[in-house]
Image (cartoon, rainbow, N blue to C red; front, side, top):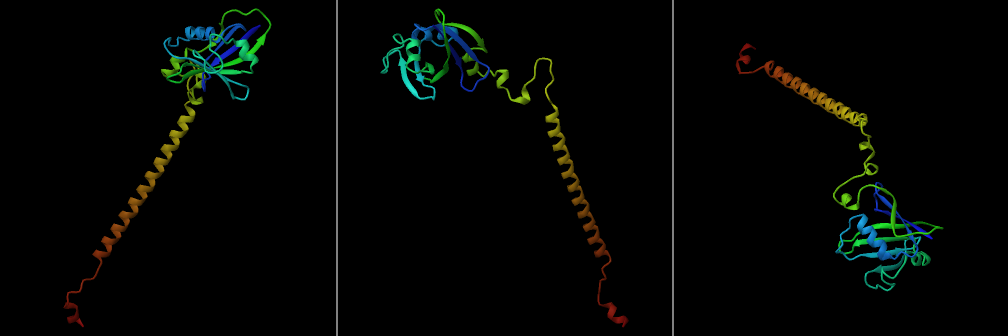
Amino acid sequence: MIYSYRVTLAGIKGFYRIYEMSGATTLYDFHKQMRSDMEFAQDQLIMFKALNDVGGVVARYGLFDLGNGTVDKVTVEQTAKAGVKSFIYFYDVLNKKSVIVTLEGIREGNGGVPMIVDSKGPNPIEFENGYVAFEDLPDSQRHLPGQKPDWDSLGDDDDKDEDEGAGSGDDSSDEDDDKDDDDEKDDGDEDGKEVYDGTEDLLL
């Protein structure tokens, strides 16, 4: 039988690896191939956290027996028969670095050693270093080579800001004009004010 597994990164659309292998492949052999293909560090503790179809933990397999056997003794066929639908494969247990390994299917045939049959994106280390795949970009930043970005939506926002700025400026100008008018009115009142110095009584 040939077992097919898809390796993905949580929340990343621009990465996957699809492996095919025989049911007799041990988890340790699978681990070694993934470590080589995806350039994981070789001096780290590793673990396969096995999950069922609803995400419940079925077992944990490591270099040391964690209660369900060691990775060099457990085959992918055995895990499939135990109801394991996916793994969280920790390639660096200490730093909690992992990928998701999902069983894609089982079909008739003579499988061999784990082998990549399809892939997408660079290795996980590139995503750790800040690489962002096209599929993971915000919609406003997606454009193909030679295609101009959609500046219209950004231009609308700028125009709106300018209109608001102009409107606020007019209001300020109107307020200044009103203030000037009031000042002039006050000045006029002061100039036209009658001043009594006491001599007016002499004219009665």
